[in-house]
Image (cartoon, rainbow, N blue to C red; front, side, top):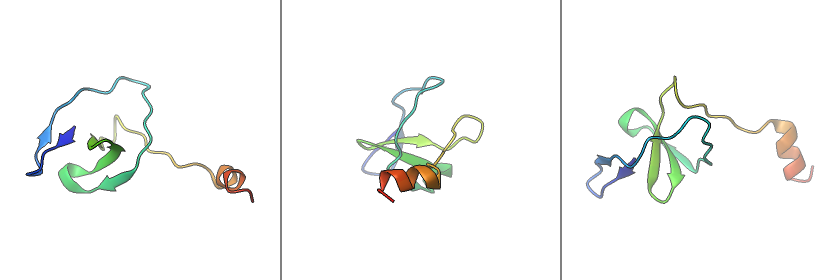
Length: 65
């Protein structure tokens, strides 16, 4: 989805099974949406979207700890 200046949603496309996106933000509007960059959003649908964060061990490796 893309949001217009008057904060309406415009359909862009349906994500395919297995597609992975980096999330840059979260907004509670429209039932909850993840910002995926470029003004695009993915609506948080429990049965279709899985949000994961890296484990603390992986974060330590990235941060050089």
